[in-house]
Length: 522
Image 1 (cartoon, rainbow, N blue to C red):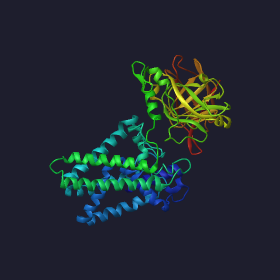
Image 2: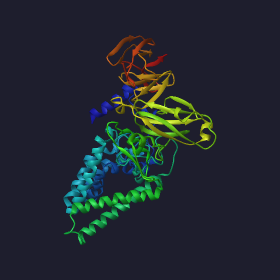
Image 3: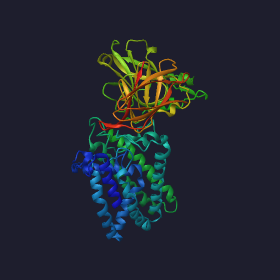
Image 4: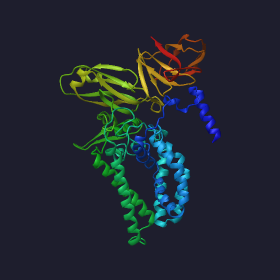
């Protein structure tokens, strides 16, 4: 503990220049005790950051505390003295959700509270132990989904009111709408959209009542009717299945949300398209069997009702696979105005079209997977359009294109730069590379080019910068504020080129450790 305290204060001195760990919060105490109740409920029940939805086996803590209260009261009091102040402090913390993984701040309690589960287990009958094992198995499966599903990204949520695991499990069903959510009412970014009572407290209460009722009914059925006719593991599994089904459908009914969502299923179908396979599409009315290409081009992918599109967006899609696309516009009045394509939310328009242009001109190519694709329009376009949908018309066959994910993109003349992580900061006339980092960027040009000319502007410290593309590389020592102009070769025959920047030093500016600024010279 002494070593941990020394390291903690040393970190504060190194980063903020003071022993006060509150320096990160401008010297104030970042606790809001008026938010304790909602924080506690969120820590336990929120589908993205709550402990129980991410690991239902911890429901056994409740029975374990009851068992300790009956047989080991002193141990229960000691556990309470350790955990209650900590949990209340975490719940009062404005960012109790931790910003990424579920139940991050409750993780230190897992091992101490295993003592309560041991006390419960030692006093459970066979049916109770079967139910405990079933909860453990579900928790293990959820943990496996966190670790191996969705390319290892499912554990990292963004406070949007939707668990990534639930979306991954059922892409065409609104499964997140059937679970309690703190951030469905109060998103991490943007205005409040609902009430904590309707989106969190009431669904959590419904789930609790259904769980208690089904547990009571199952135990009665086991003791009176099924002790010799139904196996205990099967009864426990059936109990959990009924709780899940009843909880989801009851929450759907309360929230009055759509149940079937086609957008993500359509995007997954496009992502899994394989020209070497021979799948067919089926139209039910009138009945018709069509080729893979015809079936894909009949898709009209529109904004999912589960998404929260940015203001003014006519179309907003997440995790769009690489490929060739065109827009399908439905008009409410005479065509007028302009529409633009954006990838991510920080870059500028990649393409701008007049709404009145022929439909085949409203097309574009994504060389890599895009975190989000947004179509925005001016006031005239918004007034003249009833809807905008995305139609897949071709597939990018470059190996590895689907494995690269563009977080944000910006156009610089005839080139488009795709930033694939947050070590690149995109701006309208250039992009920053963070100091002490070695990120890649993906560059695509409108036509085949042998290379591009970059201008690298150093920050106000001595620096060493290396730029590489394929087998080519160049390294240079730069003085403070020095500029370096260089020609970078591109992959002439490929859909895109990957350029790597290695920046050894940087300086703090606006809360970011900037290393160099890169602009493309046409």
